[in-house]
Length: 247
Ligand code: PEP
Image (tube, rainbow, N blue to C red; front, side):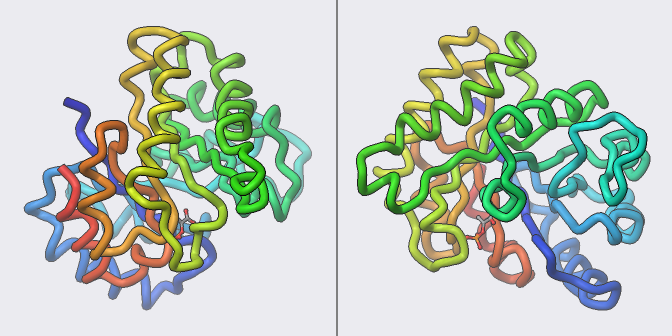
């Protein structure tokens, strides 16, 4: 059985003081977690959070990286820098980056490749807009996004994590029903299996308004292997309740 992963995505939230308070509470309650737990934090706080998580079971992640290994790319952050701070996970292709920074499927795939080259795990986000869902394009959109990655990575696909995040459910309070989510996860799983047996075992997270009251039913679906958690990862009691719902 795949061990589930619950990864918090703090987005552009936090401060030195609030991070310490939040993690203090999370660390006090996380010991009984059955799943793997990670937090993906803003770049400036990687050092602080690395220190706070030392000797804990929570792993550290970043929310993006450069597609370049190093060089003249002002404002970019290389995977080697994330590795320096002990990151295990790097989110790539979050819908907010695809939308705000015009990130293409090809760029997202290149970032995933950089992350793997640095020995870390990319959390590759895919998901459709409400208009695409209503036009019946969900399967085509998520497969196009995932295929760009699997095509580039081939057998290395087995080392990634996928996150299905319907854009219409992110930060909106509107969650995909467990059946809607499972249907898409099943499609993604079938594609991963077509890449290879090991790739078929890749963890597929669900993200989009996961909360304490819907986490358990989502995480009990056959092809849902945990969650990528935005808003609820910023409140310790909510995050811990979501973590407790995973296995
Ligand atoms: C996210 O941004 O990855 C996310 C899932 O956000 P939320 O949980 O707030 O919908």
